[in-house]
Length: 86
Image (cartoon, rainbow, N blue to C red; front, side):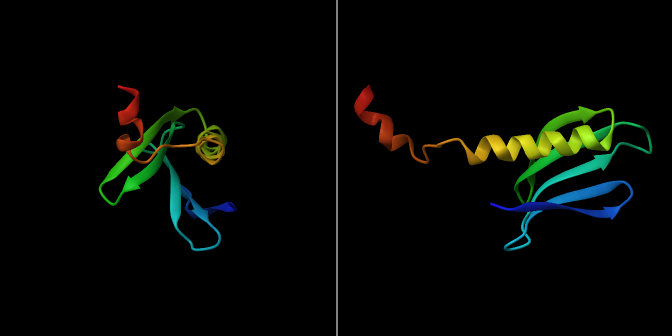
């Protein structure tokens, strides 16, 4: 799946899917310091925080690596699939 970065302000950048514009990651500057945070939106009210980084490039790389790993990971969506193993 193709994704790109969009710079909204000098303090906030969004990672989005190019086919539908869905935001799948964000980096943001912490209180005008040199520290950047990175997060992945899970729901409208919940985020998965990846950490704090020394600059924007490292924060972007963390978001990109998160999605690279997700793209290559098989996830079981239902616990019912594992009931026979008890």
